[in-house]
Amino acid sequence: MISTGKIKSVDFYRKIPRDLTEASLSGAGLSIIAALAMMFLFGMELNSYLAFSTSTSVIVDKSSDGDFLRIGFNISFPALSCEFASVDVSDVLGTNRLNITKTIRKFSIGPDLKPTGSEFHSGPAFHDIKHGDGDEYAGDGSVSLTARTFEKFTHQHPILVVNFYAPWCYWSNRLKPSWEKAAKIIRERYDPEIDGRILLAKVDCTEEGDLCKRNHIQGYPSIRIFRKGSDVRDDHGHHDHESYYGDRDTDSLVKTMETLVAPIPVEAQKLALEGKSDNGTDNAKRPAPLTGGCRIEGYVRVKKVPGNLVISAHSGAHSFDASQMNMSHVISHFSFGRMIAPKVMSDVKRLVPYLGGSHDRLNGRSFINHRDLGANVTIEHYLQIVKSEVITGRNHKLIEEYEYTAHSSLVQSLQIPVAKFHFELSPMQVLITENQKSFSHFITNVCAIIGGVFTVAGIVDSILHNTIRMMRKVELGKNF
Image (cartoon, rainbow, N blue to C red):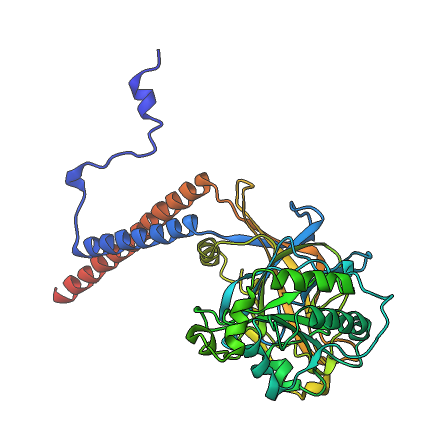
């Protein structure tokens, strides 16, 4: 059996009898200072332990979203009609997707960039349009309108169908024989002097530029259907005329006109011809529509290789006057990758302040073409993208986002002006990893703080105590 005396012999902390200890004023002050120092250093160590510290490294991209990248955008074009606005994607691997519509939404907007109605839905595909190539031109059958006569004819006939054309346009010249032949047939069946329920007309946009601009004609030919008494909406005060996207051969045109006339009784037009007006019809006002612009929003998925996102006026059955195209735009949103909630991004910025500053660099920026209309200006954006990923200590992915730099310029082009976003993704990614801290390391540091401060304070107290004693002895020696 080991005696208690032998066990006591290994005691590191031997006690000094209380009556052999002496309290001093200097020791009390030093003890208070030591206690405050311990508390301060402990607080600093605890704050360091709880703080989110990271280390940054650059590695080869190991994206979890595969070989495709999501591009989300919301862009407003004050001078591009939704009727012809097209979103196209191409890349260096040969991918070429035209007029993407599945994930894209379009809204007609006014000069203030606010929507003027509900979502715009495109008509049938233009490349399927049938033309009457066998028809021969046999003279004019439609009425030529000018800015002075346009209002008169729209008020005079319940239905006015107008072909806005340009003489230099291939598609306008291809439509011309069928249009004039159909106009003659309709004129014979519905004599304007006797019946007058419908009239086919035409407007030369090279001669009547202001009239075409008022009706926001951007592609040629554009066929518009104006209905008397129902062409002014209550909401927004805009014209409610329709666009015709159907086949352009004579038979199809005549069939369409017959369908338009069928619901209208002859008596209604006879009253108008006799001068018996209806207040709801004659007093209908026709303000210029504020629907010349388009807001395009949505997303596309592209391969992670250099490529282009192009927004332009596009049609397989219309021509465009490049000198009249203006691709000025305002970017409300443009980002890469999955959408990140603002709260999540705000929380991440508090942890990693330098992250998230460039994931929406183009947001809120305007790119306006102030040059003359004949400048044929294309607006290009060159975007270089880098992926950033934040990983917590337990290998949990906190956030995955794409940041980019943007350089923009206005370039003169011989082709139809476009808005082009050229993107190039870096093969490397920035990996931000949390530096996980050990609790045992925290405890060790706390013990070191307490022990260190206590030891240093003890040494200082001993020195002070001995110094004071020596000074007292010296004073006593002088007195004797």
